[in-house]
Amino acid sequence: ADNERQRINATRRRSRSSDSFVVFAVLTLFISITNVMRHHAAHDEDVAALAAKSFARAHFRNSTSDDPRGVGRVKIPTKVAKKGVGEHEVARLLCAKYGQPSDEAASEMIYWEDIPSDSEYRSPFHPNIEGGEEEKFVTFEPDHGGWNNIRMAMETVLVMAHAMGRTLVLPPEQGMYLLHKRDNEQKATFSFSDFFHLESIAAEHAGFKVITMEEFLKKEGMGGKLKDQKSGEVVKPPSSLFKKEGKVITGSPLAVYLRQVGKVPIWDPSKCIAGIPRSPDPKDAEEMQNTLDDIVSEKHGPKPTPDDFVNKPTPVNASVIDRMGESLGERKELCLYTTDLHKAHHIHFQVVKTKEYRTRLLTHFYSFIFFQDWQQDLYYKRFVRDHVRYLDEIFCAGARIVQAVRERARKNNPNNPDGLYDSFHVRRGDFQYKKVKVDADVLYKQSKDELTEGATLYIATDERKKEFFKPLADHYDVTYLDDYMHLIKGLNTNYYGMLDQLVASKGRIFFGTFFSTLSGYINRVRGYHVDKNRLPGHENGTIPSYYFVPEDRKYQMVEYRPVKLPLYMREFPTSWRGIDHGIEEIHKKG
Image: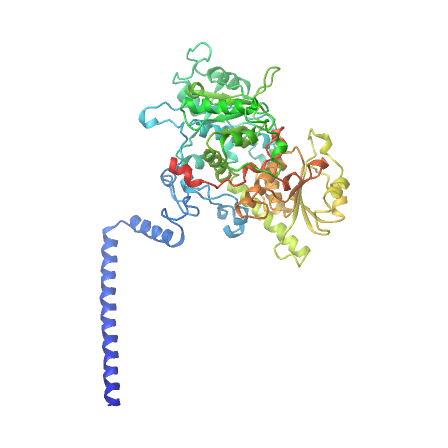
């Protein structure tokens, strides 16, 4: 009986094995025929596209992801894709073109996010051009100060152009203060596209468009669409504004013409906040003005002061009156984007200082522009973080130096496997704030409690005489940008200040120069990193950064501090704190 059972079981196993083989053979034949049919039915490029989609599905989130932002999703916008394979995407950092470092090594520099759904957002003021609505424009005069002052004003105008639904007109290429080195006949006149991926930003965003001044003057000016703001008569750009090759000249003649034909808001960031209503409905603008009046008249209680918000940040989704109360700082006025102003074909922001008013945009965009809708406020803070960043060439050069400084720190201390280093920014040169230009022994005294004796210290500075730093070199392994020239051969030397910012931003502890907008931007980048990686302090937007002097300002970055005059003196955590909150809400509205 036992032998019979064994024979039957063996027969069943052979039968199952045979059946499995038949099923496998049939499935293999079916799949092979299907693949052959699909390959012959499709063009080669279609097969490549299918393969790319299959790879993306396997390795990245798709549009049905639980994350409403689609963070991390690979998306080539239509307008970019048309430009050809290899077109730059702002969300990526591509260093292969520049030799080093590897994308993996460079990834530590990335503080921005890839949020494809943000690219579809359009301001409520954006015109329906396809439906016959008029395209409107913003022009501006670059700030007359140093690079970081110029950058701040540009960011402010860029955000206003997007929020107002207007096409941004870039100033013509020109010289910029302190960015005029002509080493080896290198480029020494610049447009903003020489620093930022503006064309890619425009290509990747449905609600943002940018054109050159040449395009604007030829299309709108020579087309008879620009009119004298007083007489209403058409004023075409004079031929004296154009060079022989058709490029636009820079300087006073262009500024005079743009002021003549553009609506010029008299907005002073030290006196008012720029109010952007939630929609073109006049009732929203009226509501914003009423809110401001209630705060200033103290209808609901005393007007808040900046001290009221120290370590007590207003929630990012708080009511309009609460958010406005903190954003005002010491200011009492609202520069409102009204219905009448929205009707203007062309708005121009000038740089003027008179006895009556001052219109210089020496301000951070977030400390001047106030959005009635909190979701729009956070959207524009993300927009600048994720897209208005330096070119890959600059970031990749910075990544090479960071990698080298980390290797130096490891050799300096074998017990430092992560290559941690500290960083300073010491502004000297022509800096106008004499009280913060102190000797190196003061720098050491003010920072020694936060630093580690003997540690590697990267110093970003415009001080050319390095013996000035001997009191620091006696205690630390001091290193400078000059030590890494071999890693940045061929890079335009006018980018060196930006490199210093990026390398210093990666320091474990950072000490900066108060009133310096270069130090300020280092802290904003550090804030972006802290918020992205949810590092200690991210809840309130605090970061491990300090200031040498004045002594009462030393600890301001390790506390939550609200916007306060003068706006340019430092950056504020409201620019990076919690700005990814509520992404899904704004897109549900859109």
